[in-house]
Image 1 (cartoon, rainbow, N blue to C red):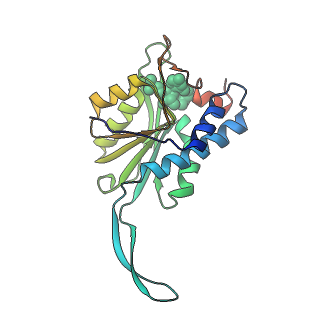
Image 2 (spheres, helix red, strand yellow):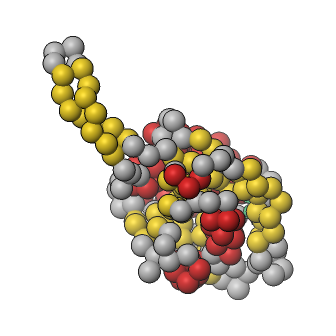
Image 3 (cartoon, rainbow, N blue to C red):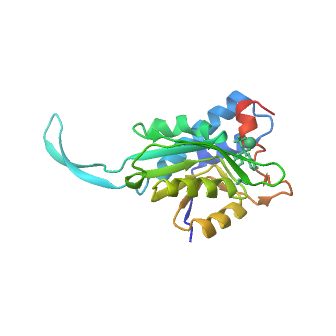
Length: 208
Ligand SMILES: O=P(O)(O)OC[C@H]1O[C@H](OP(=O)(O)OP(=O)(O)O)[C@H](O)[C@@H]1O
Ligand SMILES: O=c1cc[nH]c(=O)[nH]1
Ligand SMILES: [Mg+2]
């Protein structure tokens, strides 16, 4: 079963409420997405593999834990791009791949138009970024593409998830952990998350 981790920090919930508000303008929307991505970066890497090394401080030598796993971030274009900067605030050494997908407005099926990912995905923690998990079609297609390219240890970091999207990933990718800040009520008849925040890409890039 897909494991879902919820970010419950009060300041993340406060930022998400402001993100959802229809009065929030484009610069504020971008800043809030970046802030929320920092919380997702911290929670997504709680199980990062570590190793013990000897460090010499100005005072003495000591055994310390350091990260033993490289991280690849893969934003789903367009809206996932807004999460990269916040993620890199914490994950400063991560490499970044890109997957271009949009959801056909009629069929809601994902259409892929770009894929560029770093090599050696087998050995790395791969975190897919998309603020919205709605039907789950886009996330599922992205995860399938990354597995075809060798990824084995995958997470999906989203800001808002619909129950329908989580169920879809439980079916298609039970090995992938979902990290999110809110599980909303449902999808509406046009496939938008309720209460959601509208179209994340349009609000981020001002294309409404
Ligand atoms: O779970 P799903 O039903 O597939 O919907 C979620 C997808 O829809 C949005 O992208 P959109 O198609 O609007 O593309 P955009 O980011 O370019 O605006 C969102 O950013 C996800 O990628
Ligand atoms: O509510 C939704 C659903 C899909 N994509 C969005 O940007 N918002
Ligand atoms: Mg969009």
